[in-house]
Length: 222
Image (tube, rainbow, N blue to C red):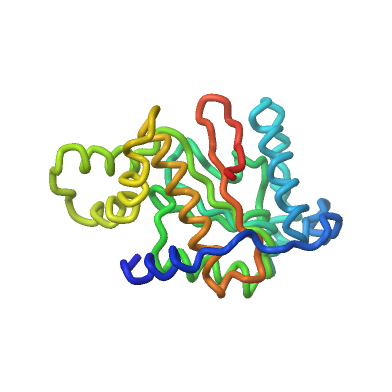
């Protein structure tokens, strides 16, 4: 994402958006879909608890539902996540076909295509919740830290990833503890705040989470 856009979003980041009561749902197939941000978030976290506990239900995979979804989709959450093969959102949140609109880039890096995809979900599909999902031991974060430590040039298109994650790495370098973990958390929170600040996403509630590769648990970031 262009540096001037990063500066604008950083300067105008705002707090979490107000949300409606968490009880509304809409029928999709045989399972009700949340229609408010609190209900959507509760559904995601409930699904993650099933996944982490080894009790996934693998919902919304039936043949009749596939036929129904062929004509329309009504996902209840946008997940902005990493491409890491160990963090597939539909499995992490125990959801199925038509439930989530997943947008994945290395390190959850934003660009215009990602922002346009989020806007499609929020404006056209009226999705009430956007969740930015970072995770521990992120390869994009590791590559960024290696570049900052050695100064070695970053090849090709990978430079975009490093350029976007490096500000979080620089901000957290002096903190005690795990630099990679601090960088991932700070970058994930920045992506959340950048999305919150964009007027195109005003109708949605935007949150961020951290996925633990060892436990399978998603924890919300403050």
